[in-house]
Length: 197
Figure (cartoon, rainbow, N blue to C red):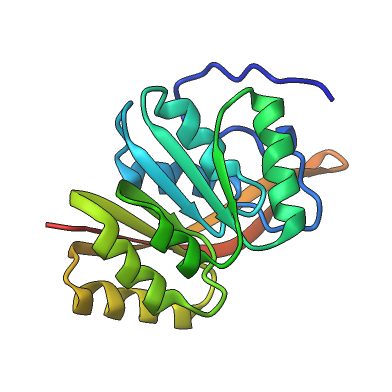
């Protein structure tokens, strides 16, 4: 497998550079916004819940060379893809295979967390994240459904997160059709964030 040296300091590694499989992957434009909402530092301890192919975890590992990144993924195919992509991009990510709620309980503390998938346990996962986050720690939830958007906002506010905000991300990419360019929409994503104060 070809290793890739991605040494740019901006988020948004092109999607086609990742090994994909049949596991969902956060698209590069959404990934860039998600990472910006995490407000990463070079020594951040980041947890990626529902990591899928590991695209966010891998970019976080590149942006936090003095920190640590932990990816939690319940699907075996996802775990294999994360490993393969870590090798491809030459980054170190700790991978935890299994149920997110159980795996979060085993992590001592972190200061940044992204929830990309919850397996139907969103409220419990958000509560666990609040309990484990350091003061001024940041949480970001990516949602493709209105129900998850609503639940995320309500849950973050109820649990005690501050500065809760939601951003709707609508991206269209140009595709050549003959001598014309057709703009094709990518599914809208909601990026919800908050701070533990």
